[in-house]
Image (cartoon, rainbow, N blue to C red; front, side):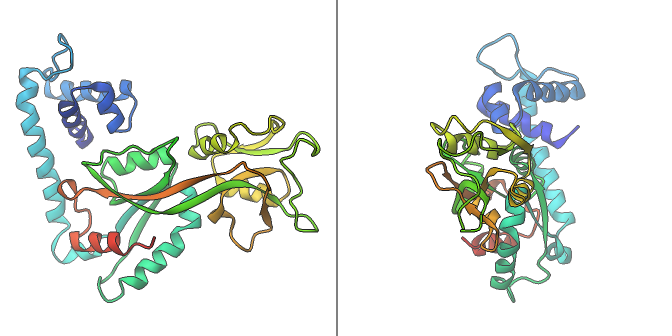
Amino acid sequence: METKWLEDFITLAQTKNFSKAASLRFVTQPAFSRRIQALEAWLGCELIDRGSYPTRLSPQGEVFYEQAITMLGQIRQARTIVRGGSMQSKQPVRLVVPHTLACSKMPNWLSQVRTRLEGRVNELSFQLTASNVHDAVLHFTDGACDFLICYHHSREPIELDPSRFEVRTLGLERFAPFALAGEHGQTIFQLDPLAPLPVPLLSYSKHAYLSKMTDIALEGGPAFLKKTVYETDMSESLKSMCEAGMGVAWLPESAVGDESVLRQVPGPYFTEMEVRMYRRAQRGRDALVGPDQADLVWHYWPD
């Protein structure tokens, strides 16, 4: 049996809706249903009354619901005890972050946190997992880390249950088109109908979060920007191609940096994203690190 099956079942019992529960667990509904069925197969009984609507638990499911909450609590308590005592302070603070933020923001953030906490926490260390946004959220909600830091846009929101997760807004990130600067400081490509056509586009893979941000930035924009010459998941790769003069790329401003040979392409084709930090709410926290240490990192994290 996997711990996430218990979390799935508890979420389903509380929401009484497969679709909503799957959304809260950040999996597709078919995958969520398969995990519930796997738990039922392991137990050898049906937990859901599939002859009724809306969704409700079977008599066995009603009994197991209370047991599942107790079991999950005991598992988390056991992990806390095993990692407790003198070893607790040595556990790394675990973060999951999208690749772009891992490269552009994390070095400065971690440096500031260590400076702010100097003398307050002994042997402070961090463990960073860099991932795409979708997998980063799954990693966090499955309890594999202490903090999630990611982008958020009102048109493509990261929806986490506020009763289970706390959130801080760390700031705004401008997301705009960039291109190599020419001799006179102007970009070698222009988003202008009178410019040579077509404008070569360096784009994100369709499933990437920043691909959706590009669509929002370009909404109602120039129809002449059609030719994709390079596609990847990674903004760092797009930046490198952009620096080689291969085309126009939409990039988070912090990923470009002050010393870059790139310049923002003039025009209205940009948007802004929030940078957000999440942790579990107090009553649902796993205590992957000591509670005092985790709280200090949370409160002293730079905006």
